[in-house]
Image (cartoon, rainbow, N blue to C red; front, side, top):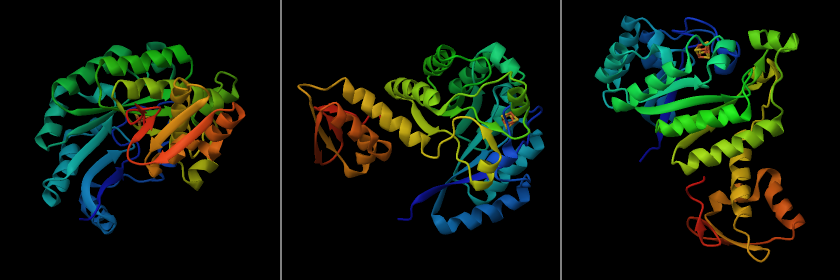
Length: 324
Ligand code: SF4
């Protein structure tokens, strides 16, 4: 059977009624133009050579901020070609009124990803988001109560947010029982309002090590609550990296966070200076750490690591599958 693929459709800034201070969708998505509904089929067809189209996702703008006729055009153009494919859309908390959710439901959209970024009012205001924390909570509750699968995007290092504030954000998404979460440390792109704030000395981005330490704690917490963490950090191509001015960017950030989380949780289980790890080979990079950093640290601490390759992932008999 051919492997299933998710086709991403980027609609940069489509449906956005304001610009958030950190946002540079043209750079991040690599797209300058909004694909019209009548071209969706051609784009999706091109992806068919890579596998069976399982899901189509709209990213890069505010899907439910589009005029409702345009939303319907996009969704019906997919449904005409692919009656059974899963559809996901990404949007903002203040564009999720019941009428818009009706449209999504009518076209069988299952997954809604919401760019919450933070629940803190002052920070939302400083970022020019245009809604408050309560609006975000209500929107997520509405989506859950209507049976959508709900993903949330949270950002770290936004102007005015501390680690404690950001940890409250992950606690809030756990209370709301969202299904998945993306964690994006704030990056500064050229010529954005955030870049100007930084030039005026009003904003200092997180260092990579600070971002890593915050992300590891949040990641462990979210996974402990059974929430899927489906992305950590932005993917940037070469052109996007040229426009990156500052911020904790690393192409392997997700791997670094997960491997550090494994290190932290193993540290709690060490007995008599040794650990016995049984794991599937594909999980070994998480045990070893980025550039074998974890193994080097165990060696420096004189901890003996015994590895047996088999199914699953256990450390001294305790399963780690929940964490990865
Ligand atoms: S709503 Fe999202 S896509 Fe639109 S400007 Fe803000 S961050 Fe960018």
